[in-house]
Length: 364
Image (spheres, one colour):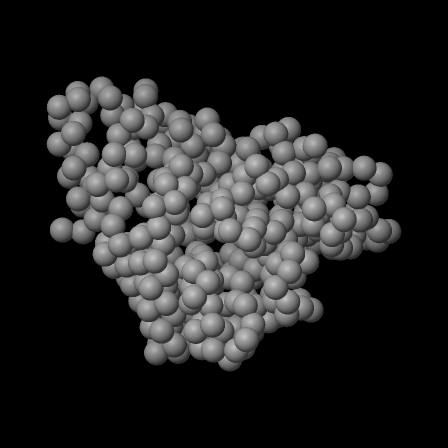
C-alpha cells in the first residue's frame, strides 16, 4: 500500500468515528472557493500599474516553504525587495541562503513586470540594507516577454511527470533564459546522472528526516485544507502537491503517522524517474549578492519552462544538507563551489496554485 492510500484509508477510519460532518467543506473551505481566490491574486497586471500592482506580481515568485520572507519598500524611482527575517526557516536554511534566493526570484518578477508595462529598470544589490535587492527605474519603452506572460501561471508542480523528452531546441531556450553573469546553470538529461542526483536527494531526505527540528519546522508550514491555506496566505497547501485534503485538527496527526523517510524516498524516486531533466544552479560566490543572482536565474528558468509548457519543482536536499554539496558539485563539474538550487522539470499536470499574502501585508 502506498503512502497516499494509507493516508486516505487512515483518514476514513478516523472520520468514521468523528462523524462525516467534521470532514465537510463547511469546516475546511471549498476547493472551488480556494481556486477562485488564487485566480484573483494572479489576475492580469493593469496596463498602467502602480507600485502595489507591481509588488503583487513580484510576490508570485518561487520561495522556500512558501514562507514569502520578503518585504517591499517603494520610493521615488525605486522599489526595494527586503529580507523578512521573521519568516526565516533556520532548520532547513541555517545561513539564510534560501531566503536571499527568494529575494532574487521576487526581484526578477518585479523587473519583468515593470519592463513589460513601459517602466524598465536595473536591479542591484544593496549590502548596507540587510542585503536588499533594489530595482531602480530608468527611461525606456515597454519590453513585453514570454517570461512576463508566464508569471501568473508559474507553479512548483510537486507531482510525477509523464517522462516525455524535452527537445534540444527547448533546452537551449531554457539555458539562454537563465544565463546571467555570475551564475552557471547545469542541465542534466542523461539517465545515469539523473539517477545519481536521485541518490543524493534520497540521502539528503534521510538526513533531514532524522532531524527533529527540520520535521517540526516543515510541519509548521503545512496547510492541510483550503480554508487553512487562505487564512494564513502562506505555507505548503496539501492540494498544491496532490496530497489529500484534511481537517485542520486531523492533518498534523496524519502527518505524524505517515511522514516517513521510506515513503518520501519512494515518492522522490518516482518523480525523478518521470522527469526528463534536472537543472542545477551554481553562483560564482557563496554570498548574499550571488544568492540573489541565483534566484534571478532560477526564476527566469522557471518562467521560461512555464512558457514552453513545462512544469518544474525543487529537489533541494543535496544543497540543503551541507555534507552532500561537494559530491553534487563534483558530479556537475564544478568542484570546490557551492551548488545553490536543484530543480527537476518535465511535462506534467496542473495542480492548484499556492496562496499569497495580501500586498498590504508585505509593504513597509
